[in-house]
Image (cartoon, rainbow, N blue to C red):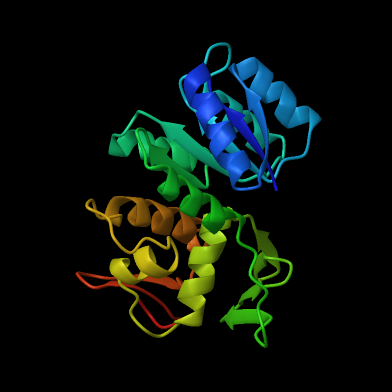
Length: 227
Protein backbone atom coordinates (compact mmCIF):
# COMPACT_ATOMS: atom_id res chain seq x y z
CA UNK A 1 0.00 0.00 0.00
CA UNK A 2 1.42 3.35 -1.07
CA UNK A 3 0.58 6.37 1.10
CA UNK A 4 1.27 10.00 0.20
CA UNK A 5 1.85 12.28 3.19
CA UNK A 6 1.33 15.99 2.42
CA UNK A 7 2.63 17.80 5.49
CA UNK A 8 4.74 20.97 5.70
CA UNK A 9 6.12 20.41 9.22
CA UNK A 10 9.35 18.44 8.60
CA UNK A 11 9.39 16.74 12.01
CA UNK A 12 5.76 15.65 11.71
CA UNK A 13 6.25 14.46 8.13
CA UNK A 14 9.35 12.47 9.07
CA UNK A 15 7.66 10.93 12.12
CA UNK A 16 4.70 9.86 9.99
CA UNK A 17 6.98 8.43 7.33
CA UNK A 18 9.03 6.42 9.82
CA UNK A 19 6.00 5.20 11.72
CA UNK A 20 4.12 4.12 8.61
CA UNK A 21 7.16 2.46 7.08
CA UNK A 22 7.59 0.48 10.29
CA UNK A 23 4.07 -0.84 9.58
CA UNK A 24 5.26 -1.87 6.11
CA UNK A 25 3.51 0.86 4.15
CA UNK A 26 5.31 2.49 1.24
CA UNK A 27 5.42 6.22 1.96
CA UNK A 28 6.07 9.31 -0.15
CA UNK A 29 6.26 12.78 1.41
CA UNK A 30 5.43 16.23 0.02
CA UNK A 31 6.25 19.28 2.14
CA UNK A 32 4.15 21.86 0.27
CA UNK A 33 0.76 22.05 -1.37
CA UNK A 34 2.25 22.43 -4.84
CA UNK A 35 4.52 19.42 -4.43
CA UNK A 36 1.67 17.33 -3.04
CA UNK A 37 -0.65 18.32 -5.88
CA UNK A 38 2.03 17.44 -8.44
CA UNK A 39 2.68 14.01 -6.89
CA UNK A 40 -1.06 13.26 -6.77
CA UNK A 41 -1.41 13.98 -10.46
CA UNK A 42 1.78 12.16 -11.42
CA UNK A 43 1.58 9.00 -9.33
CA UNK A 44 -0.82 6.35 -8.05
CA UNK A 45 -1.52 6.15 -4.32
CA UNK A 46 -3.78 4.05 -2.12
CA UNK A 47 -4.27 6.82 0.45
CA UNK A 48 -3.40 10.46 1.06
CA UNK A 49 -2.73 11.94 4.50
CA UNK A 50 -3.44 15.63 3.93
CA UNK A 51 -2.66 18.59 6.16
CA UNK A 52 -4.95 21.58 5.56
CA UNK A 53 -2.60 24.48 6.35
CA UNK A 54 0.00 24.21 3.61
CA UNK A 55 2.19 26.69 1.75
CA UNK A 56 1.45 27.12 -1.94
CA UNK A 57 -1.92 25.36 -2.20
CA UNK A 58 -3.87 24.70 0.98
CA UNK A 59 -5.27 21.27 1.67
CA UNK A 60 -8.89 22.08 0.85
CA UNK A 61 -7.89 23.51 -2.53
CA UNK A 62 -5.97 20.33 -3.32
CA UNK A 63 -8.88 18.16 -2.19
CA UNK A 64 -11.60 19.97 -4.13
CA UNK A 65 -9.45 20.13 -7.27
CA UNK A 66 -8.58 16.42 -7.38
CA UNK A 67 -12.21 15.46 -6.76
CA UNK A 68 -13.34 17.69 -9.65
CA UNK A 69 -10.76 15.97 -11.82
CA UNK A 70 -12.15 12.57 -10.93
CA UNK A 71 -9.28 11.44 -8.70
CA UNK A 72 -11.00 9.31 -6.08
CA UNK A 73 -7.96 8.32 -4.00
CA UNK A 74 -9.07 8.12 -0.34
CA UNK A 75 -8.04 11.19 1.67
CA UNK A 76 -7.58 11.36 5.44
CA UNK A 77 -7.29 14.95 6.65
CA UNK A 78 -4.82 15.63 9.46
CA UNK A 79 -5.21 19.10 10.93
CA UNK A 80 -5.22 21.22 14.07
CA UNK A 81 -8.56 22.73 13.02
CA UNK A 82 -11.08 21.03 15.27
CA UNK A 83 -14.34 22.96 14.95
CA UNK A 84 -17.48 21.26 13.68
CA UNK A 85 -17.60 23.69 10.75
CA UNK A 86 -14.05 22.73 9.75
CA UNK A 87 -14.90 19.02 9.89
CA UNK A 88 -18.05 19.52 7.86
CA UNK A 89 -16.18 21.58 5.26
CA UNK A 90 -13.45 18.95 4.96
CA UNK A 91 -15.93 16.10 4.56
CA UNK A 92 -18.11 18.02 2.13
CA UNK A 93 -15.02 18.78 0.07
CA UNK A 94 -14.45 15.06 -0.48
CA UNK A 95 -12.40 13.80 2.46
CA UNK A 96 -13.00 10.23 3.63
CA UNK A 97 -12.11 10.92 7.24
CA UNK A 98 -10.81 13.66 9.54
CA UNK A 99 -8.28 13.35 12.38
CA UNK A 100 -7.45 16.28 14.66
CA UNK A 101 -3.88 16.97 15.78
CA UNK A 102 -2.41 15.97 18.13
CA UNK A 103 -3.47 12.37 17.71
CA UNK A 104 -2.23 9.01 18.95
CA UNK A 105 -0.38 7.05 16.28
CA UNK A 106 -2.38 3.84 16.97
CA UNK A 107 -5.56 5.80 16.24
CA UNK A 108 -4.11 6.97 12.93
CA UNK A 109 -3.25 3.39 12.04
CA UNK A 110 -6.79 2.29 12.89
CA UNK A 111 -8.26 4.99 10.66
CA UNK A 112 -5.92 3.98 7.84
CA UNK A 113 -6.83 0.31 8.16
CA UNK A 114 -10.51 1.20 8.07
CA UNK A 115 -10.19 3.30 4.91
CA UNK A 116 -8.01 0.77 3.13
CA UNK A 117 -10.05 -2.22 4.20
CA UNK A 118 -11.38 -4.19 1.29
CA UNK A 119 -12.93 -7.18 2.95
CA UNK A 120 -13.97 -10.03 0.73
CA UNK A 121 -17.70 -10.40 1.07
CA UNK A 122 -18.68 -14.06 1.27
CA UNK A 123 -22.06 -15.26 0.04
CA UNK A 124 -23.68 -11.82 -0.17
CA UNK A 125 -22.39 -10.06 -3.29
CA UNK A 126 -25.20 -7.52 -3.70
CA UNK A 127 -27.55 -5.63 -1.41
CA UNK A 128 -30.83 -4.08 -2.50
CA UNK A 129 -33.70 -1.99 -1.22
CA UNK A 130 -36.51 -0.72 -3.47
CA UNK A 131 -34.75 0.62 -6.61
CA UNK A 132 -31.35 0.88 -4.87
CA UNK A 133 -28.73 -1.78 -5.63
CA UNK A 134 -25.26 -2.04 -4.13
CA UNK A 135 -22.60 -4.31 -5.62
CA UNK A 136 -20.16 -5.35 -2.89
CA UNK A 137 -17.58 -6.62 -5.38
CA UNK A 138 -17.30 -3.54 -7.59
CA UNK A 139 -18.31 -1.27 -4.67
CA UNK A 140 -20.85 0.56 -6.82
CA UNK A 141 -24.25 1.87 -5.79
CA UNK A 142 -27.01 2.39 -8.35
CA UNK A 143 -30.50 3.78 -7.84
CA UNK A 144 -33.11 3.70 -10.59
CA UNK A 145 -30.31 3.05 -13.08
CA UNK A 146 -28.28 6.06 -11.93
CA UNK A 147 -24.85 5.42 -10.38
CA UNK A 148 -24.23 7.13 -7.03
CA UNK A 149 -20.70 8.32 -6.35
CA UNK A 150 -19.70 7.47 -2.78
CA UNK A 151 -16.56 7.94 -0.72
CA UNK A 152 -15.05 4.92 1.04
CA UNK A 153 -16.68 5.86 4.33
CA UNK A 154 -20.06 6.58 2.71
CA UNK A 155 -20.01 3.18 1.01
CA UNK A 156 -19.21 1.40 4.29
CA UNK A 157 -21.99 3.32 6.00
CA UNK A 158 -24.51 2.45 3.28
CA UNK A 159 -23.35 -1.18 3.37
CA UNK A 160 -23.97 -1.38 7.13
CA UNK A 161 -27.36 0.33 6.97
CA UNK A 162 -28.53 -1.95 4.16
CA UNK A 163 -27.40 -5.06 6.01
CA UNK A 164 -29.56 -3.88 8.89
CA UNK A 165 -32.47 -2.55 6.79
CA UNK A 166 -35.74 -2.40 8.68
CA UNK A 167 -33.92 -2.17 12.02
CA UNK A 168 -32.84 0.90 13.98
CA UNK A 169 -29.10 1.50 13.90
CA UNK A 170 -27.80 3.70 16.72
CA UNK A 171 -24.88 6.11 16.51
CA UNK A 172 -23.05 3.89 19.00
CA UNK A 173 -23.44 0.93 16.62
CA UNK A 174 -22.11 2.99 13.72
CA UNK A 175 -19.20 4.25 15.81
CA UNK A 176 -18.29 0.70 16.79
CA UNK A 177 -18.97 -1.19 13.58
CA UNK A 178 -18.32 1.33 10.79
CA UNK A 179 -15.74 3.67 12.34
CA UNK A 180 -14.25 0.79 14.37
CA UNK A 181 -13.93 3.02 17.45
CA UNK A 182 -14.72 1.23 20.71
CA UNK A 183 -13.33 3.59 23.35
CA UNK A 184 -13.41 7.34 22.78
CA UNK A 185 -13.76 10.20 25.25
CA UNK A 186 -15.57 12.41 22.72
CA UNK A 187 -18.57 10.81 20.91
CA UNK A 188 -18.54 10.65 17.12
CA UNK A 189 -22.16 11.84 16.91
CA UNK A 190 -21.40 15.00 14.93
CA UNK A 191 -19.15 13.19 12.45
CA UNK A 192 -21.72 10.43 12.01
CA UNK A 193 -24.52 12.95 11.47
CA UNK A 194 -22.46 14.73 8.81
CA UNK A 195 -21.88 11.45 6.94
CA UNK A 196 -25.54 10.46 7.22
CA UNK A 197 -26.59 13.84 5.82
CA UNK A 198 -24.19 13.49 2.88
CA UNK A 199 -25.32 9.91 2.24
CA UNK A 200 -28.99 10.94 2.37
CA UNK A 201 -28.41 13.71 -0.18
CA UNK A 202 -26.77 11.26 -2.57
CA UNK A 203 -29.12 8.31 -2.09
CA UNK A 204 -32.44 10.12 -1.59
CA UNK A 205 -31.98 13.64 -2.91
CA UNK A 206 -33.42 13.28 -6.46
CA UNK A 207 -36.03 10.66 -5.57
CA UNK A 208 -39.58 10.89 -4.21
CA UNK A 209 -39.28 7.76 -2.05
CA UNK A 210 -36.82 8.34 0.79
CA UNK A 211 -34.88 5.31 2.02
CA UNK A 212 -32.62 6.76 4.73
CA UNK A 213 -34.68 7.66 7.80
CA UNK A 214 -33.82 9.34 11.09
CA UNK A 215 -35.53 7.80 14.11
CA UNK A 216 -35.61 10.67 16.57
CA UNK A 217 -33.62 9.99 19.71
CA UNK A 218 -32.62 6.49 18.61
CA UNK A 219 -30.62 6.53 15.40
CA UNK A 220 -31.25 5.67 11.75
CA UNK A 221 -33.03 3.11 9.62
CA UNK A 222 -33.23 2.17 5.97
CA UNK A 223 -36.61 1.05 4.61
CA UNK A 224 -38.96 1.93 1.77
CA UNK A 225 -41.97 2.80 3.90
CA UNK A 226 -43.18 6.35 4.43
CA UNK A 227 -41.03 8.63 6.60
